[in-house]
Image (cartoon, rainbow, N blue to C red; front, side, top):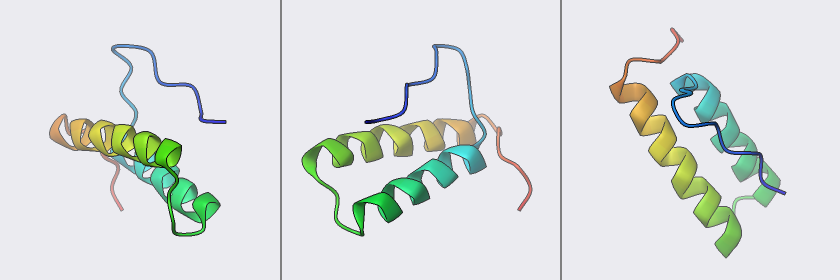
Length: 59
């Protein structure tokens, strides 16, 4: 089951979203199903928004 989406106006850090993307790939074993692909695309969009807003964390 996919994690609940973040409420509108709530912005997670880019690193937090990146971690969720990594977990998705690990769970999927490197090959995404159609449902996982949709989740991945949403996460990438969220990650890009966090990067644009400067909500990243120092590596």
